[in-house]
Image 1 (cartoon, one colour):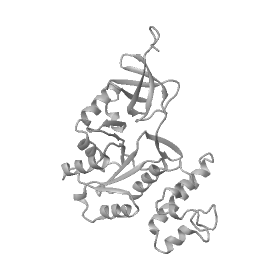
Image 2: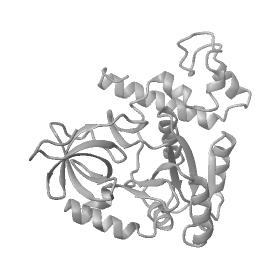
Image 3: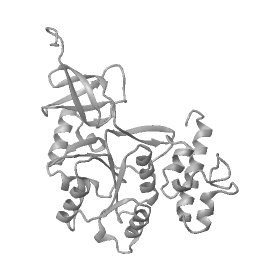
Image 4: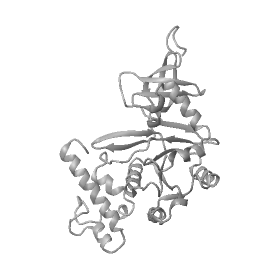
Length: 309
């Protein structure tokens, strides 16, 4: 049915950049629009497919969000934040310098698994891994069945680009990592025009330098796409409950349901299959300690906010 005379024209678009309440939309023809959500704030994220109405030149009102294939969340304290929608892979980047937080990587992987999203862990700057700490962390993850990659985006740029491009294929991938891990360098390898596109997004949103803290989606040549996110130092998991947390630990999941008690927390309960596996050396004590820290963190947050799951 055609649009009524004088009525705004409806169209579908993808959210390709977002900063706070601002977002940028790209339609199927590649045209960009500054988007605003009708009646709501903060529920549209990069990667969303939306239904819009043109409201003015290069501007549109978002009427609805189309069904999502996935939604990746992280928590900041007790508050959950959506990182991206409709992605099927998370790329977690870490590097030997500056010093990385191994538990940040572990947390990100749990969040991806809980969202039904596959993961790839990338050790960048391998030329700076003099003490082997980065390689050891990567080997630990590989032993848990995680897909891993070791590259040097600056010292061996072409080899890094080829390896990353091959690993990503046609996936819609989200890149996360702590500040300083080399995410932007990796993005620029995959998307040579990323800086120019970022500047275009910045101009359209009239945000200037603030877009350094925005999320941005880039199409990859030959298929697939990649979403760059701001670097952040913490990856909270308050949006997960205890059962989800245990189920997302790959070394725990085969043993779940084998404890004496159905509600076992795998901490101090008798006849716990998880604790028995730790004692037998089948589960790394450091990983169980990590799990215990998460449970303590969740308990603390739920005492403050009983509405959490």
